[in-house]
Image 1 (cartoon, rainbow over the protein chains, first blue to last red):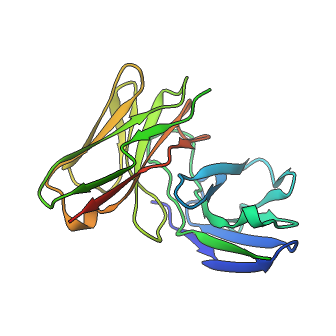
Image 2 (cartoon, one colour):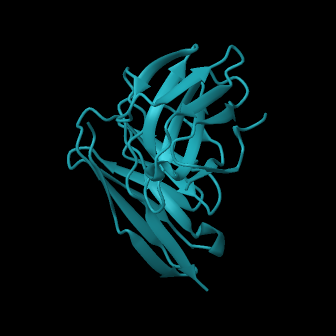
Image 3 (cartoon, rainbow over the protein chains, first blue to last red):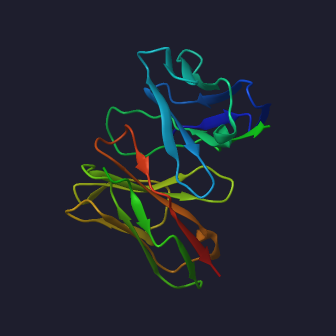
Length: 114
Length: 112
């Protein structure tokens, strides 16, 4: 099965600064790399994803970069705002078949300091 | 387009009892999966249903079981509840397995 590690477990940044969260995985067959955001009292929400034929993807202030050789991908948030405060999870997976479900990292608690 | 809705939002049960949690998938989604999220942890995969059949299961004992109905709604049943079953239970649906899951807000189960 997939082993997933996220770093850091907690990240505190000043509002307006950038935040980077890294996810390392073990299964070289993984080809789909999503990031989920979970706010207090809510379920995880998909915020950005990338497939293995792409190295980087951006969506406004959020970007994901992938290094398949090193088996890690990262979430980048620029110009952080108070509403970015949440727990962020990565969940790399192989989408070629089977039904193994998502394997989540343990999460990164992002705190935006005013 | 409606999202994923789960009921109830909170539940308290006694050890040894049985519980049923319910989920309505997002409109048009035919795959539903269930996750258990302990406090401070990432969600853990329980099982997945596609076309009313279980087609994937995580490392959970048989006392965790489920159903998917023709309208793609789903139930999670847990028998012989244990204290460690206390967690947030999340339902997620998707049109195609493996891509783009939509999660509900979960049911917070407390076993006393």
